[in-house]
Image (tube, rainbow, N blue to C red; front, side, top):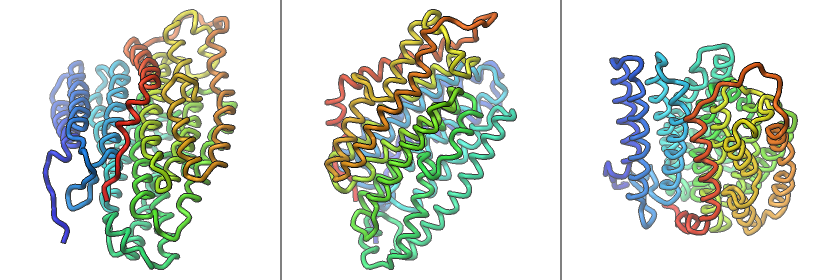
Length: 473
């Protein structure tokens, strides 16, 4: 029988989020409307405490807790820090637009619960805990998508929910088949039990499980909800939906490929490589002629998931895959949220043409936008450049040179639609009768994210060393 290790310190970051959500919900019930920002400050404090706890308690060697259901290794620790750091950025972007909103406290609580679900996905080493993390990451996000209760928001929430519920059921069906096949839900035990299992059941169960995680990651073929959900949501919620759930889903996929499914008679690497190629290519093609900036960023996230799936495909083939994935996740989170911060800073500028003349009015904000968009392309010395370099190297090292070549071609192609957004900012201003509304807080967040992207690119060597290490199992 597996020995239970129930030390609460092993889930201290998660405990901080739960405490912040519960206390925030209680405070929001009696705080006056103009004082509900206190619940946002409490949420930020919970995220900050969680980051510190994840860094301090990061295990030197891989281990597990709670009967092996939760992995304690570099993948879990890095996932926690990236998710909570992204949560801090989303909370900062929410501060101004939600001030004195009747449901301000509810928004901050939902953000914390969505972060908690993503963290559970990142650390899950048991199929049942993985299913719980999927639900916890999904349900608050559905509510955040329709938080404004307007037409576009309601449509976004409905599409997000319908696709999520459908693929959630498919995922539960896959988990059921894998349990019936291997008679276990823990990854280490499942890896041993699947030897000699019927290939048909194993294949169907694996595909069902992967379908749910592809939905959370926003990868092809479970990607079609993203553009409408991101476009219809409020900008801070769109930033969260398009970025943070991917961290938990991709780390979960990586762990599945590295531990229970690495030695099974299924073409895991080939399947993930095809999905990576389809995601980066279709995302780029769909983004080429988008004029709505949130929709453009939505298709951009689909293409970025294609690059992020590359180290997942070679998880069991090379030691370079883990640090490449984790570094790219951190770089992508900062850079993509920086681009969304510019959108939040200019809430009235929904289309590319609305940014015309921005360089003359707001040179620093324009510089931040240029850094973040060119960073998403992979332009040196930004963090995503190093991330792509590491990912391409790991992919070639894992035996998928064709995928790395296709990724380079897609990277060059993506420059087109990012430049379609950048070039108008240096053009003469449009004919608006008055300047658009601006958010000073979001501008500061955009400056910070752009600076972080550059700093992470310069300090990439030290960060990559910290992200190496073996997985528990």
